[in-house]
Length: 71
Image (tube, rainbow, N blue to C red; front, side):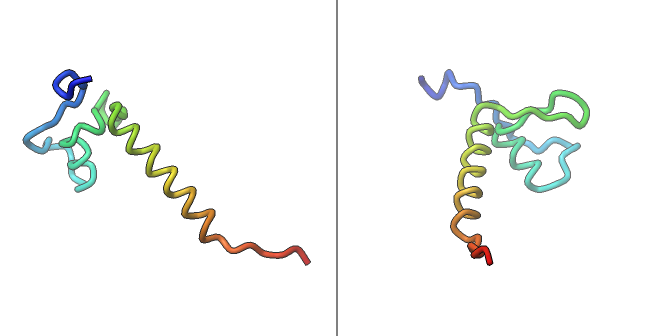
């Protein structure tokens, strides 16, 4: 699929209601979209990024958690 046909709405300016830096960046990058007041939905690329971060976090916790022997 060509990138020109991919659903990725990017914004050039930050919306006024976005106050947190991460919120502004996700809106501008086209990762999330506001559905209603205070309700946001993940767009396809944002959902893919979210799942990848979850996979990394789970694998990291499995590696770093110490195993305690049962006594």
